[in-house]
Length: 225
Image (cartoon, rainbow, N blue to C red; front, side, top):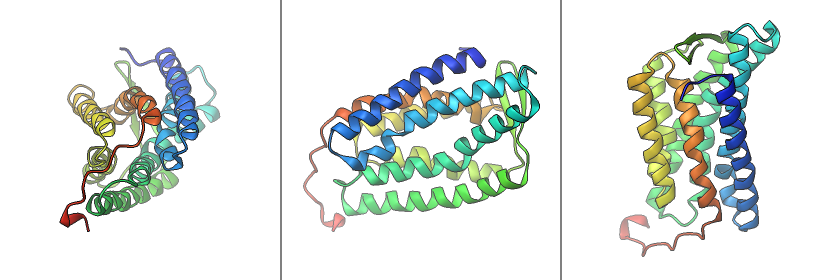
């Protein structure tokens, strides 16, 4: 798949529609604790629609001011929002998990906050620049300690899904981990852009999760008390 304004519009529109359906199903299920994570496909779908505007700006088809707003809005969602939204959503949904698992997920929420804070500061103090590279976008923001923050970012987001204890969420975590590896190997310069796009597509798995009944809790182990 070649990333472009048209590709982002198509993918973003489809994922946004799935996101609206996810929220509706989570609301009808009578399990409000699932709502934050159910909102993820909607957030990522809108994210891809915003990137369509970023593409238009990179191609010179959008005036400078709207193009700058689109770049900043995209970066805000990709950087400080996602490492907070995902672990918070998983932790909120883990009402039936054991105490040890809930504590680990709470630690990942704290990690997400620690990652989001310097990312938000970088966005507040540096302009967001974008360069197109072979049908991908390379975002440059001036993030301090990028390798360390990226490791924390992936641990907070993907790690929360893998630790959730829910089979469908773990499957989503495995798919996003695979997407991260593919993006790191094939699109090093545009890692965050391509990973967010693939994460948006795989997040549609949450449509089934939002309508599934809650998992039956396993008998508590001594370590969970």
